Amino acid sequence: MTDFNYYSLENAHEASGFVVVVDVLRAFTTAAHAFNVGAEKILPVAGVEEAIQLRKRIPGSLIMGEVDGEKPAGFDFGNSPGAISVLDLSGRTLIQRTSAGTQGIVRAVNANHLFAASFVVAKATAEVILRCNPAVVSFVITGESAARDGDEDRACAEYIQAVVMNEVTDKSAYIERVGSSSAGRSFLNDRNQTFLRNDFVMSIQTDIFPFTLPVEWEDSLWVMTMNGP
Image 1 (cartoon, one colour):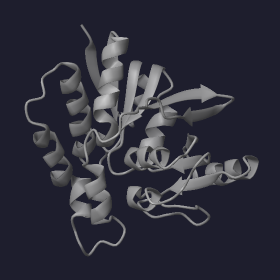
Image 2 (cartoon, helix red, strand yellow):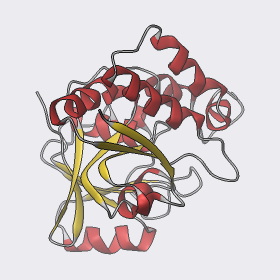
Image 3 (cartoon, one colour):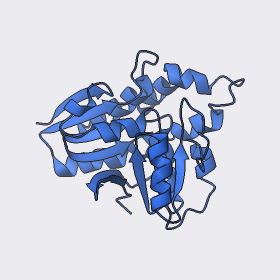
Image 4 (tube, helix red, strand yellow):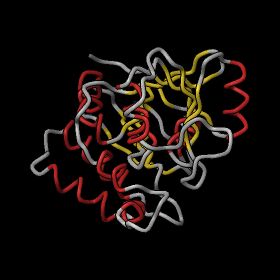
């Protein structure tokens, strides 16, 4: 019997066992689309300067991400699945820095297995959990903070758990929570030029990719890859 636990960024270091770091809007939706257009690997980092220095060390690498939703100076791309999905990233190494998702990755230091997730890879992630049959699954809900309720990420985690437990009766009930979350409402405000409605629409597409986003610690770097068909 698998035990499911939930953590925020604040206590992500306590997450153990099979750890799934969830960021729906938009880090790991963007990451999945990057792999779908050919990226070879993604290196999640915590800081802007760290990302810029890492790009100098890795020829041909590119940086994507955000600070407070905006693309930082010196980054190649922002944190937009819509923008990433139309590129050709064949064989490229990406460096990713975001305010929530990548922070969860770098803080999940006690994971035995570590995966990034969003709705676009939710079912595939659940299927890996089923195959591994771990004693403990820990979800890191990266959107939860004093300023945000993070319910878009919690809904995704609860959906993955429900798939594992064969308890999904209405997928839409989980997806609707993305729009009603505090982050989701920002994307549905047409006057907001930072959080685009198209990125929201792409982020609620569910189970569209058959691969997962495993993350491993290699040569003093976190390395995310695509695992699956």
